[in-house]
Length: 139
Ligand SMILES: [Zn+2]
Ligand SMILES: [Zn+2]
Image (cartoon, rainbow, N blue to C red; front, side, top):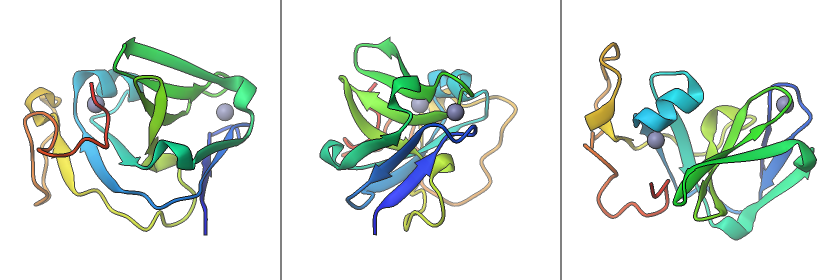
């Protein structure tokens, strides 16, 4: 069954027809600012598996670097997906409806995590990206 999700105002919705390939909590300074939170959680997929099913005209893409950016609803501001080199390659797990069938496997970019947040679970932590993990946010 396809994975679906959407933004806070409900105008933008997406569908992922394949399986999610892995998920991480990203603590990098860009994600922290972009989400206004201690970290953000993404799950990767094959870019060919992602489709906007409503509100695509409201989706704005912000690319901080040529390598990576975010797709968000221009009405309500929800961040829905991450891009790598112009392709949508990850979804923000917080916008998925129901059980995505996957749980975060690690904390990445812990080297730039917020001073005020202590990681208190036992997931692996990586200073930058997880070794061999090319599916998430190649910044
Ligand atoms: Zn919205
Ligand atoms: Zn990040």
